[in-house]
Amino acid sequence: MPKDSHQAAQAASLGRGQPGASDTFSGASKLLFEQAMAQTRMAVCLTDPRQEDDPIVFANRAFRELTGYDESEIIGRNCRFLQGPETDPETVAELKRAVTEEDVTVVEILNYRKNGEKFWNALHLGPIYDDQDEVRYFFGSQWDVTDMHTARADERHAKMLSRELSHRMKNMFAVISSIVTATGRREEVPEVAEKINGRIGALGRAYETTLDDASAGDIELSQMIRSVLTPYDGEAEEIICEGEKIRLDPNVISILGLTLHELAINATKYGALSREGGRVKISWEIREIEDQAEDCLTLSWTEAGGPPVEEPPAGKGTGAGLVDRLLAAADGSIETDWAPEGLRATVHLPIR
Picture 1 (cartoon, rainbow, N blue to C red):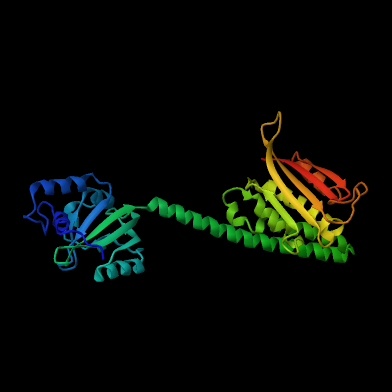
Picture 2: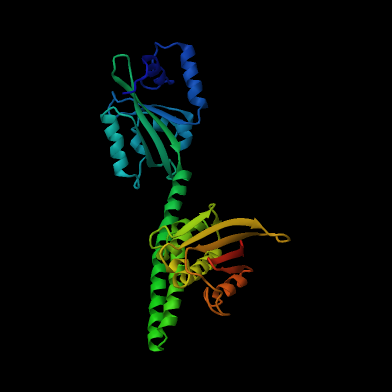
């Protein structure tokens, strides 16, 4: 158990007219202690467990400024006078345990200033021993961590909202899919409903695993790619992703998610993912565009190991022009090379 020297214990008790002040310590040491306590920004107080109710016997200027109380309102009182209606009883119990067991503890406790204002106090509490190994004082250092506590609370709130939004989006996609399926059944066009549902599902997956991260205002590209393509990667080895970590605007993520979905559907029906041993490699990078202020994302889709392929008739393959229209609306484009060994597609999309 950590123990301070007898000299430190005596120095800690110094104070003009305060209970427990020592007359045996040199004037130079008294002055040094008082100067140190006056200059530190850390709020410090000492309590005397040998007196009834363990009262405060020393409080420096930083402590008085932190709490708003004058010295005469602090000395002789137990530290609990800083507690209030919203102070956590479990935290108070931990402090009592530390005092009873002569232990060191660090807690964050909600305290109240003299004017009633609440503040989060990072309190470090520990015993000070004399040369007979008896507890002479308890040392308490306080630090106002309200801003940090508020920031953590805001982060937890943002994550909670993200999870709730994720839940609602899943429900929304499920409802939309049900409507599409029911409409397709009535209109006797189930294949159209299936295609639409596939695209809705791709949009949902593009956001599902990244909504907690989206509170920052953007989404990590590789996470989205793996989420969208997981249903098509049977052995989790058929689709290979290579690229640096890039965070993109959710609107860009939506377009890329649907584009990858259409490419994967095409590969599953006709290309590399339609037979065992087929592979798809996806890579990406950010490139500068000449004469334009914004950078461009270049994403490459390369298939290998599938059956020989041929360029489909106009209006067929890769979403029947859906991809072209999506990308064109965002000033992007897609280049396709129907090589015999497999489709090669390059997507260019400005980052906004």
